[in-house]
Length: 359
Image (cartoon, rainbow, N blue to C red):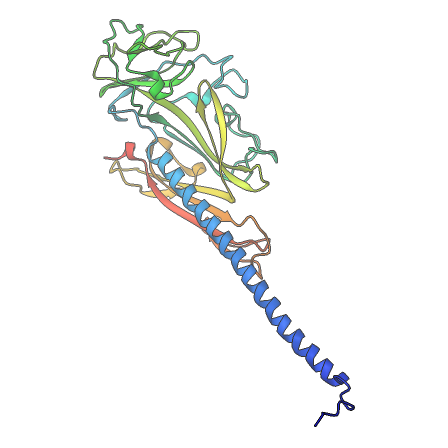
């Protein structure tokens, strides 16, 4: 028997509205799930980048500070550093052109200089390195700390291969290329009793010969004589001056920067972005037991030569805003602060010992 389709009229308005309502409820749930997952992914990605930036900043700064004042086997305290002064005027280490080179004044003991919550104008030591406060890329962010570190680094081709017959004689080393030593490089020659700092005044390229020649002429140094004639027990090290600071990054974010000596001038490198502040406290040893008696900011240090360790703190923030439903609170630099935006914030702190000032 055939069915009678005469009364099949489709869906009623009520049935249609109920169906649409159910669909909207399901669609709302799907959208909320997507938004929630998307936000979670953004937060996880931001937190991962912040952790990477924080760990890198701590590791990099710790490594630099830890080796401050390294002069080979000649230990600071029982060694005379003869600073064979570089020529003040017309040389790449005088970035501000004021006719002096305050940043170069390394005498072995002054391996660390600190500048607390910097404002304009900066100290001459920093302007010699080309640093300035401002909104431009690479310029220093006001109100943050700056630390300057001096020392030397070992190099595989730095062994002296020929006894000097005069204090003014050129120095012969194994291979300057292996040490990346070029004309106008800052170098330190050191044995276990003395050390001399000078600028290489010639092109030391070995040109296929089994040794490289380092001259210390008075065109870039104030004198040609070293404190002694070094022998085969001595080595040449790459001397460096490095500043770590918070600056304006190329992507518009605050970043950790390094300005350091390279081949006769200072070069600046953005290390990692998202680092919005650096604060450093310096541990002074006042009773010669090679341990800090207290920690203070740079402005309150009695004598930087007595600093044996540091508390280094970085504040890292997410590059993206609106990741937190409310303004977060964070503890940094001994204060509880409420953020002025909805970014994520995370402090990172480490205590770093200056190895070359302790036994």
